[in-house]
Structure formats: C-alpha cells, structure tokens
Length: 61
Image (cartoon, one colour):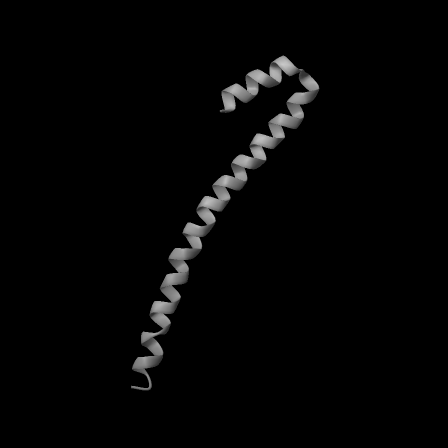
C-alpha cells in the first residue's frame, strides 16, 4: 500500500506529496493505536475486578 501511494504521489507532483503523505501516516498511527488500545485495557481491566472481588469476599467472610 505504501509503495503504491508513494508512486502515485511522485506522478502527481511535489506539492501533493505533503498532503497524501500525511494522510496515510495518520491513518496508520490511528489503526495501530486503536488495535493496541482495546487489547491493552482489556488485560489490566480484567485483572483489577478479579482481584477486587475475592478480596472483599474474604475479608467479611
């Protein structure tokens, strides 16, 4: 994908290189962040509830 974008940019011109180059870069960053964001919070989020549940139950019990 990146190779095709670079080739198209070269044919279009130098001024357009800045616009299309920034678009794919932003999209790539967002995609990577979105993919890692849901995966990272899911792991830590599942740990606190699991540990918090047995803790209060063991104290009063």
